[in-house]
Image 1 (tube, rainbow, N blue to C red):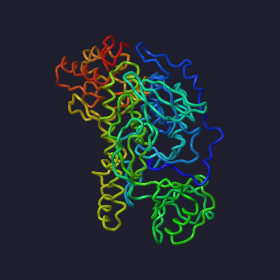
Image 2 (spheres, one colour):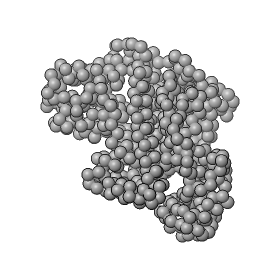
Image 3 (cartoon, one colour):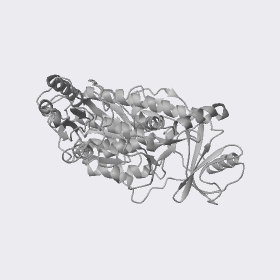
Image 4 (cartoon, helix red, strand yellow):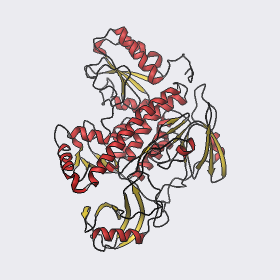
Amino acid sequence: MPDTTAPVTARAEQHPPNAPTSGNPPTALRSPAPQLPAGAPDGDADVLVVGAGPAGLMLACELGLGKVRTVLLERHPAPPGFCRGFNLNARSLELLDRRGLADRFLAEGPTVPTTAFTGAARLDLAAMRTKHPYVLGIAQTRVEELLTERAMELGVRILRGHRLTGLRQDDSGVCAEVDSPDGRMLLRSGWLAGCDGGRSTVRKLAGIGFPGTPARRFALLGDVVLADPQAIPFGMTAGANGTVFAIPRPGYVRLITDDPRPPDNRDEPVTLPGFQDVLDRALGRHVEIAEAHWLTRFGDAARLAERLRHGRVLLVGDAAHIHPPAGAIGVNAAIDDAMNLGWKLGLTARGQAPDSLLDTYHTERHAAGARLLRNTQAQMLVAAEGERLAPVRELLAELAHAEETAGYLAEEITGVGTRYPVHHGSGHPWEGKMVPDVPLERDGLLPLLARTGGGALLVDESTGTDALREAAGPWADRVTVASARPDGLAGAPAILVRPDGHAAWAGTPPAPRRTTAQQLREALHHWFGPPVGVTGPGTSAA
């Protein structure tokens, strides 16, 4: 669900007694941390991450895995007492699989092979080409808890109750002004990532535009306890004056219904009497709410930041894009952004790659953000237009289940079909796409990526790959060469895999070995920086 409006509560937020609190006091920021390679910038951190939602936590995990000194700031003193969403889709699970984390999440909830699409239509997730053809039911709060545990395992410093109030950047880093429990403080870092939601302070302070369309339709969401739990059936209920969607949750029910008369001030708190009135009007009968845990309003605004990188400041997740709630894909898009940026920022912060590598983050994820807005807006428009677009909904329902189109639609909506541009295309079907778990001589690609956090060059020994192994040698600190089983690379002699699991380059079987090796060196240089011993602008010898 997009962070289009600040959450408002019917009562004070309640935080669990064991919720993580602020980390070490500010002076401890200079205590021992992961050692940095020569040439790394001085300061309180290599990367300052602002916002401890899924985007910030996933990015912090990626940076921690890369031995980058990372400090994560969160303005709230404790995690929220409410939950925005309840799912991880196949794309997120694929990415987590490449860090050896998917099983932690899969142990937390049920999987379902379909998900809401538009109107009464549902996407057939089983038609997707993925190891995870389903959606996982898991609360966003639990996702954040698991990512917090992982970030702390990797040595990330998490400071809660710390609010960013100002920033300025220069050629060598970023200075952040922060309000902390101990007063005002200044933090110096090489890079700053804004993962602080749709109302991003980082985006505003950096002066990055946020064009798009404002919200035109609003809905009310209430996590409530009903006096009669059987008064509203689960699922969609068509009432006399509207519809109400009821989702069962442990100890309460989540109710969602249109807000027919939103106030001029969209941030005006949603009150229990007001929610009760809208609910009763929609149903055409009174259903008493005994207690409200969380009440909020959200809209269908769609906005995409003009740029995801401005100098040494980067935007991730809702800070970069907000969208209508169709598909409940917000958390998943945030994890996708963070995985794309994390390894690139790690290489750059360690001085192993030029900062131009970060431009590919904008190129890839800005385009993905545009597709996200297009897909969610299309679903909302079709669903909202009543009988006029009923034939379109019927057609989409057929396409969502037809053998020829069900897989494409599901992969497009969930992001499983994501394909990034490649610079030396050979026409291989894996280029730019997520590489499957290729069987290797010792284990598989997924365990390799999870273990190293770096890239991989997969080679088919049966095709004669000595020249390719030799070409990759100078990048051995960033790319592991591994032997795939014969014919395991879909016809290619070698595949270069990025740390996020996407294929960056594929060899062409008929090409001369010298030509193929040169193309590989160019791809390695583009995606992983200069080889060991070569320095240049923005890089240092590893």
